Image 1 (tube, rainbow over the protein chains, first blue to last red):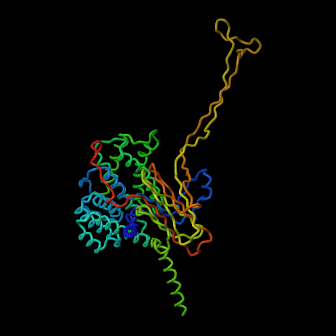
Image 2 (image 1 turned 180 degrees about the horizontal axis):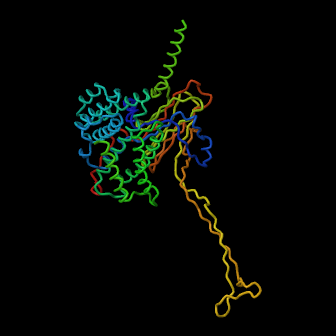
Image 3 (image 1 turned 120 degrees about the horizontal axis):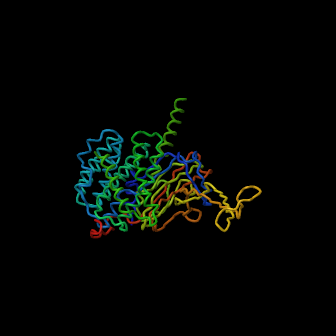
Length: 278
Length: 204
């Protein structure tokens, strides 16, 4: 139990580096008629910060692993691509992509891939000045535990934990939404590429359909970025377009995703993901 | 001497700022009882001043059990969980009123003309009122929990949903600010506890 507790402390912030995302509090809340809500009418001046949280990609991969989905290393972003990314936004997006790939490999016990991906992730993190969590000692720990999947899982989580602390303490919120978006998109890309025969009532179809709710958080997160730029505007436009597809399912009678909508989501996700990794 | 004062003030300012940014040092101030859940994914840490409200917008996956608790350096912090949803609101766009008349006809089906006025003779007048509705999808929130009775929420979520945790720092809290931790934990964390199924031929 004590060990478990220590483990939870260690992993407490795991992955939240990328998925616990905070934004400025300039969003108007449309609050309705529920009585208790009146007590928490939001005054913008009293909202110093908003947090837009997404379940981490590891949860998608855990689900797939538990569901018996096979692993395909062809779905990973090749580590050779890491040198292609020059500007900070592209680096942030691909840090998210590689982080999701890293999670995919650790969940599926692909230890050598984990090691390689950690190096690529480390490079991008360093380029972005996110040195904490990706230092040499972590790399050495991975090397020592290359045969132990559970340890690798914990070590990679630990590195994310340190990154979170670093990002938050440095107020580096300008990179967070991009990292979160990259990670979320990669997990959705891997999930949709893995499904070969779509069954709207299957667990994985439901989990893919659920991503519409994560997407809503992500859109709000990007909307909350005060200083918008071409990158943010383009991403927001892409996300809104994807959101329209998910809304088709959400507003259907049974709430299930149809094969046609799934096909459109799969194609759009593939296009967006490939634009980022190229 | 004056410089020393200024340096001292700067030091205090920076130490306060640093403290503000390190609210993730959970064990410094938080007594919340964490369970054997995974709190890593969506927990949030913030520094709040009196009167501040912080929304933590989360997504809870279906068929999972969640544990949400909030702790703060200030004991009287209040928090709530609400579920956002969309509902359809109807409003009247237009009311159309039509009047239609039927006229008297003779045995041959021709309209009968009033000899005095020269107009057709009205047999009956009917009024129809047609209401055109506007249908609009609006965002609303439904209360799931507030911490008046307990300081933790533990529930199995049946269907994936968004959930917003609102944390409100009372006006009587420390004017210099207080750390707050919002723990959002999901059960099933250790990978070794998972059992994988054989690949399903249906869709993989």
